[in-house]
Image (cartoon, rainbow, N blue to C red; front, side):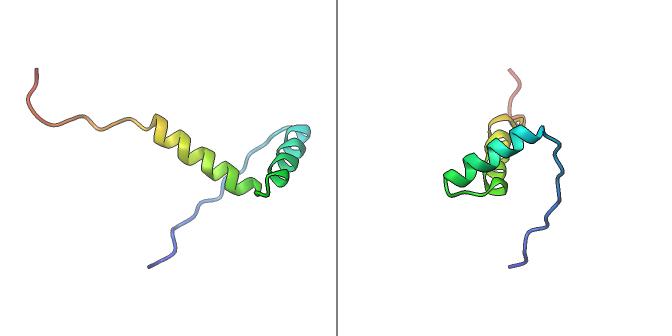
Length: 58
């Protein structure tokens, strides 16, 4: 199975927020990328518009 196509994202945050996020994820034994990807997946799943249902109009 081919590797999924990846896109790079850049994000500007205040240094203090970056440092706190890095320390928090490290304390949980996780890395920042994995935590951000998990958040993005959850956000998209929650907010993605649902397709219109086909069928009779009522």
